[in-house]
Image (cartoon, rainbow, N blue to C red; front, side):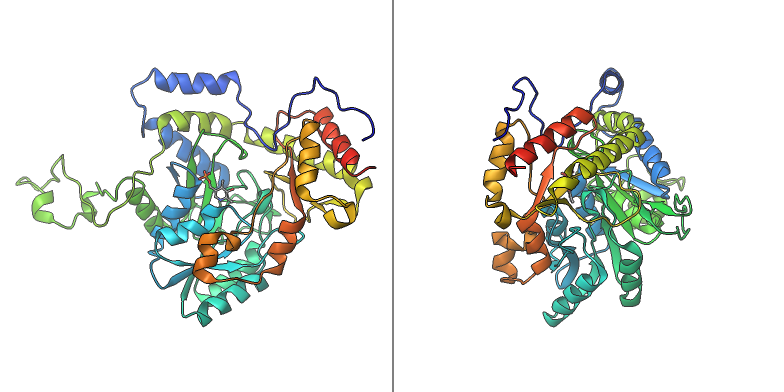
Length: 419
Ligand SMILES: *Cc1c(COP(=O)(O)O)cnc(C)c1O
């Protein structure tokens, strides 16, 4: 190895939250107030989020996984149904369909971007139909913060009568290329890009505020939609399936008193939901962080540009993953490494980076390889997902990093590559 890494430099994980004193003050203010669980801060967070992405409704929930599950429930997915899910994603995108008893039709991804395109979605639909499943929805993942090709996928979904649930857990603050198609509450379009979460071409978009994501709530999730009926379903199922809207009560005799008004204690449960509520404590942190989203996204974009420039000399051995356009709020910085030519496997590269104080991670093991899904669906041939998995490595990317930190990661990678 050429030159020793500086020993005093702190370890850089692949991602971490950026919490300031004002975030802490926002949380402690809630702790001193009247509400700990779902209260006025959750409502404020929902309103602010809906406004940020330009959606009519935003429903807060416990985490991104709950958001995806609630979205599948809102579509009434069940046994015999199937959801098309790109195999390069976190487990939760697929598991959400299974929570409802629906099948997962794994789709291949572009090995350069990790994104599911229209052709891969069509191939997954064909396989699902051959298996006798009724395909109901597409669940594109905006991997690393880059948008999937929503126009192509939405055209396909419209032609086939499918719903789209966007897994936007990586894409808080991202904008996709394209013109907004205004519907419902309208899309937050500037003419050339549309905010992810505007749902102008999808039924729902699901977000996560896990600490490694673009903004942190501790744990937290959000679903956006422009559809009033879906919003009602999401609000019901996020809290046990309870209905308190008098107009929706089924048992009129029990619901209404002699004077004709709804009984003050009364609620109904047409079907069981979950306790997937967000707390005001988490919402306070999420709301405070939402105010910094633009700054975080800008800083991430600056670091991505610096990585791109500094890493250019290592190509083609190490190159940045492909680009899909739009204005991503980058969640991950992924490089694709030719390990065979390098003569080192990924475990060795990760270990050599680690001793230099540089964390790295693999996003993701294709979900169709998980023992549960392999047992359920057998071995699938998804060469794009395998190609991506064989080459990908996520490098540190979080707003508190300095330009010097980026350079330190690049220098560490250069030593690993013997450059
Ligand atoms: C983080 C993540 C989820 C799940 O979010 P949680 O808040 O951790 O439950 C789902 N899908 C993707 C792509 C994610 O990155």
